[in-house]
Amino acid sequence: MTQSRTSKETTGADTGQPPSPRSSSTAVRTADETTEGKTTISSAVVQKVAGVAAREIGGVYAMGGGVSRAFGALKERIPGGGTSAATGVQVEVGEKQAAIDLDLIVEYGVSIVDLARAVRRNVISSVERMTGLDVIEVNIAVNDVQLPEQDQQESSTPRVE
Image 1 (cartoon, rainbow, N blue to C red):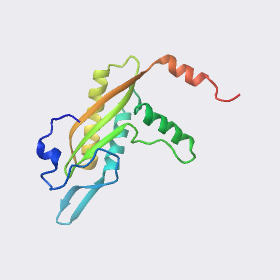
Image 2: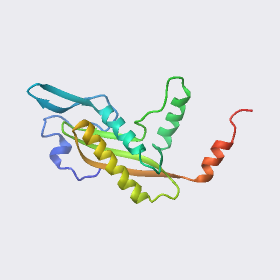
Image 3: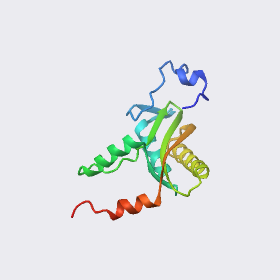
Image 4: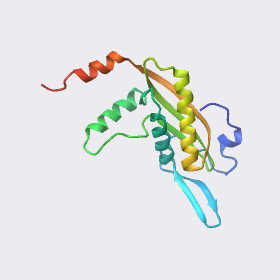
């Protein structure tokens, strides 16, 4: 995350608690508290919403760095493992705010600047609409570009004979 947040936000001085670690922890944060009750949202929920919103934008080939993609590929081979919507997404969630980091692989030929703007807009809109949290920043790291030749090689090479 960038240093754009105030020291009050990064130290947790407003709640008397240490700052929440940036992770996929299942810690629950307060999103809404009224006289009728309190609504809490898990950090994992924010992570999944952000991941799905990022993948909705055309030009995003995949998400995650090399290690997380390797674990994701391994997980897909395990029956019932499926794919994780949270791959390539790290979140830091407070009581009323969230900060999000995304690792992207983009398709060759796509304007990375325009793609990043579209992803950022969609992630902010989706997370704020679904959780009520104020998204203070979305940092995007483009880790790779998927070349058209790579797609053809991967799809034409049979795994077994």
